[in-house]
Length: 161
Image 1 (cartoon, rainbow, N blue to C red):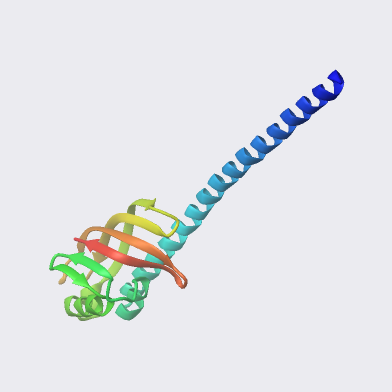
Image 2 (tube, rainbow, N blue to C red; image 1 turned 90 degrees about the horizontal axis):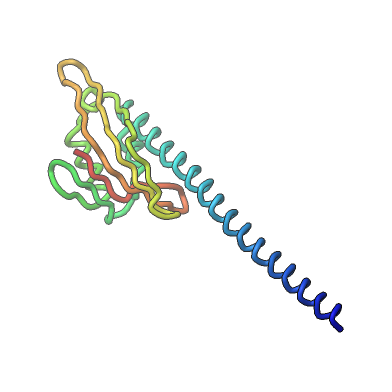
């Protein structure tokens, strides 16, 4: 009888060890997966911004705007204050940058990219417009919030100064 009781104790301890080990392994795997997911998401967001800089630099404002959420709820904060909506933001860009020479060549310098959740990423950085000498270069800082949609990452809020 004593051998049988010892067997059950050993079996119970072994089973508990296996269950705890599996739970720890699952937790580690989940944390590793989130890190991998965040790294992949960050690369995707950087690609959206790279595509935007490329489109801007050839004078394609509509192409540039593809990086933004096409919604009336898009929020843009700039020197003129708050702007709501994708179309209004595009119209403002067209007024402010009427031709390719006014637009110049856009580059971004990322200072911080921080995942806020699985579906939102904050990007903080510096923008620079290299323009003809007569127009003069421009630069400033920006913070944008990206959200993951079915069709990819889009900027839902932009504060540029």
